[in-house]
Length: 532
Image (tube, rainbow, N blue to C red; front, side):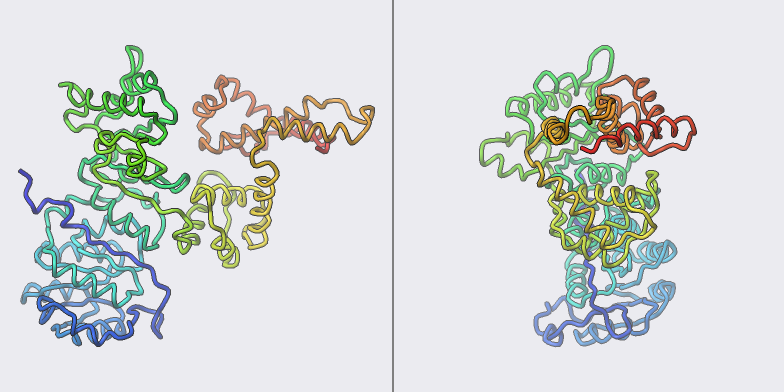
């Protein structure tokens, strides 16, 4: 039987909250009005504790000492975590509050934790990221509070630290070294801090997880992060988009045939991401459950040994779908030992600036022009409610990088691009592409005599449609021509030839080859003769 010390619920007490309120030195502890009355409400277990504090900022140390002394605690402060380690070799303590600065400071924290594993450690840091959360847990921290620290958050963290004995072995089991600092998830809003806290507790356990939220909130990215931050990041991560999959499709996709292995076999030792389980019919839900249970019952089945971690996604709270009779409760409990809701972007607008900067960097890595963005532009982005969530923001950022000249994205550029997108959406919200093209062409031919229409209309229309089509698909697949060809339904060699003829590189951008450019200019000239 598993020891209680290994329970993941005893470990993760990570509380992140970003505050823009700062003291007169723009540092640290944010006072809370009425704090002096707090001592009357403190439990007896909170009194007369020995607390050691390490922070480089003198004002921070003084403020922390004042708060904790007023609560009846015995406090010693220092600017160095190494000093705290020395103190602990000579005397006992009930709590350590230390500032986390870089890898070295976390190493010292880990030493403190090894020396006195029974002493809870609360870290404060300028970083509020998933990577920092996992690293902090790995170093042995019970809490991670972002700077500037709010007094009530600190006191709540101290309450939790004293109320729950810290578990050294379980803490180590929840984290691993982070090999890639390019974080998949960005945000420090309170709603995202809850996600980090939950994910940190789910990294190690091989439990099936359901990630749900609106379209575009980042369910696939989060599922991948849960796998990559886990103990087997090198193992396969296999995504199975379910959509409106039938019973037969599910059987073939999961189990495969003699010629090719199914998704279950491909995911052996890693994770299988069932994307969009809420799109399945009740019949398909039953078949999926049957297949999963069957794979787990087989002696050689990869689920039988726990070799495949199941991660599922949904755009809705499936508990409501169960109540409405639209989803099978047995499948829900098979796939949702833990359920995590990803908040929509409108619920964390304070994260828009950090998200935008991160997306600009990712766009640059994907071959788009490197851009910066000014404060006014970020404020304009925060005024939008983002019905398409992070995906909508990502698309807007990529359009801004591709279409707007200059190295700085301004509020005017953002306003122009958002207005253009809004106009396009309002123009034909329920109109198909075919109907839109027909409408434009009919209007074009009706507004002038046919004798004035220049020759080459067919080639001009094909060029106008084909080039952006290939650009968009290649950009969406990050230049993966095999995947792009599959989406387009054409042969890979055909796609390669078309990209060469149109002067497109693998990302859908232009090439500078002389012959290609000349050919492309000829096509553009032909298309320019028509003003649709």
